[in-house]
Length: 46
Image (cartoon, rainbow, N blue to C red; front, side):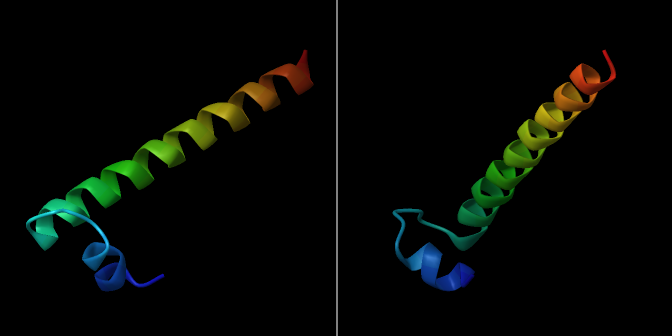
């Protein structure tokens, strides 16, 4: 994973804007994963 390279392949005007969006995206993926895992656990118990 090379963030600078990824940034160069985008149309963002600033690196900080790119990073902000990148981490927000990661955070959302993590939340979705956690929610999915919680649902799986819930159904396993029932």
